[in-house]
Length: 342
Image (cartoon, rainbow, N blue to C red; front, side, top):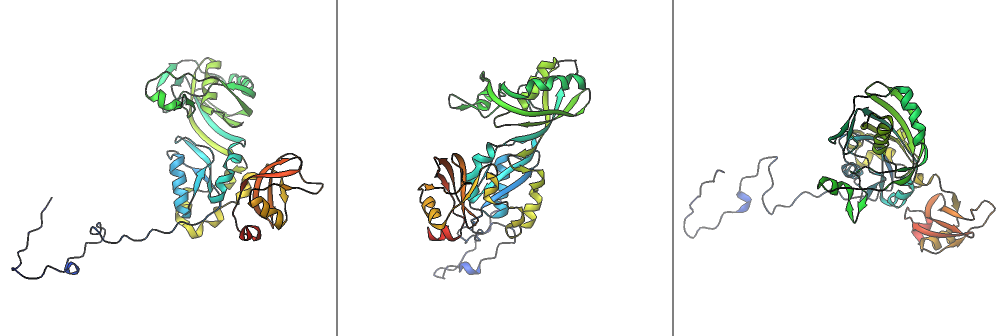
């Protein structure tokens, strides 16, 4: 560190004026106590952004990037996608965060690569080998084994997963060297098919329900075929109603900026595509906004199950219909006549 020379001043002379000090060079940190430039004020942004996440990015970082790109106040994602995986990561902004559970409960689709001959402790390419084999399956053998895993099956999750054991995440326990024993859980796999095959690896497409681990599927398939295997590449192509056709890239969002990203924003109710919609009057909307149930009328009104209400085409509430009465569980503040008057 270079110390600046001390300048002697005559006794009784006034102290130097701070305004006469040299101005800091451009790019340097401003002097202590100097006012910092104002940060852009966060905005109320409501809707879904379907991000095509790249390999190497965490889901948490992806949410932060999208939140910054829209300068939004609130954001969250609908289902973690591992850093080694790419593909569809739905990110909810503002009021859309209230519909996250509906997307997470939706069906998912993947394309993944299984590399044969090595099983790892993480069931993917990041882990260390725990079992090896010189055997390699034929395409016919892989295709013959896939039906074993289609339908309602029991699946043991990977040791390195976010499942909690006595309040601790399984991956934290595994990293600490503790023995992790997970019990099998029911999952639903609707479709499995071979896309490409070579002696060393097979590309497979899958459609499945909530809670299914593709890494565990590759592990169990390798064990069944007697050659071991692990996931070496993974891409998610669908989450609930959202597909690759809806997706946008990080670079495009950052280049467009907060004022140019409107075209990448999907309406909040897009997440409710599998839920019946019922139009309600202004008075009924006001009741729902206060958390009060309303009686649904009309021959097309649902009698039981989930439903969401709209007033003037604007989403008002989502809830359960019980004996013809809509009981709101989530209400939305998206503007419009009902919300302005509430």
